[in-house]
Image 1 (cartoon, rainbow, N blue to C red):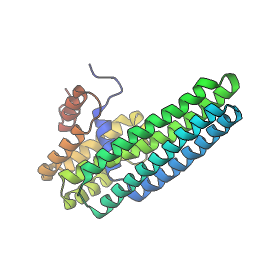
Image 2 (image 1 turned 180 degrees about the vertical axis):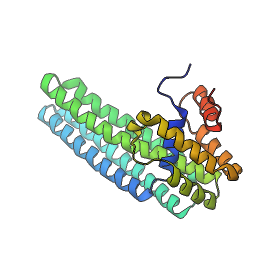
Image 3 (image 1 turned 60 degrees about the vertical axis):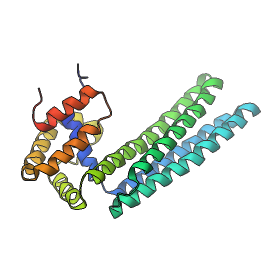
Length: 241
C-alpha cells in the first residue's frame, strides 16, 4: 500500500523544477549553509570546552578535525560537478558521484559521532542548548544534501539527454512549472502541480522520444520503494490507477 504522503506528480514536478535551478544559486546556498553549520559546530565546541573534561575535549577536537577535512573534500567535489554542469561536460560524472557518496557517508557518520559526545555528558540546561545547536546544524546539512540530490538528477539527465535536449526541456520547465512554492508548500498545492505537470506533458507530445527519456530518468531517480517507482511511472504516463 502506498504511503499517504507519496504523490508521484508532486515528486516529479519538484524534481523537474530543481533540474532547471541555476547552478550559481545552488552554489551560493551550499556555501551559506556550510558557513552556518560550521558556526554552530563552533558553538557546540564552546560547550564541550566548558565541561573541563580533557578526555572529552580531545575526542571532540579529533572528531571535528575529521569532519572539517572531509567536508572540504566533499564541497570540492560538488564544486567540480557544478563546473561540469556549466560546461555540459559529461565525462567521469558517475565516478565523481560515487566519490561524493563515499565522502558524504564519512561526513555524516563523523557528525553523528560529534553529536554523541554532547549527548553523553550533558544534562538539563546544557543538554537543551546542545540539542538546539544540533537542530540548526541538521537543518543546514539537510539543505546541502537536498541540493546534492538535485545534482544527481542533473547528472542523470546529462547522461541520458543531448545538450540541446536539456536546453529544450529546461525552457519548457520554466514555462509550465510554478516556482512560487517551496518543497514544503508543494503538497498544499496539489491541484496546481497536477495542472503544471499535465501542461508540460502536453507540450512534450511532439517530442515523444525526449519525454520518454525524461520519464526514465525521473522514475529511476525515486529513492523510495520499488512500489513507489511503479506508481511514479504510472502517474507520469497518465495512468494513476
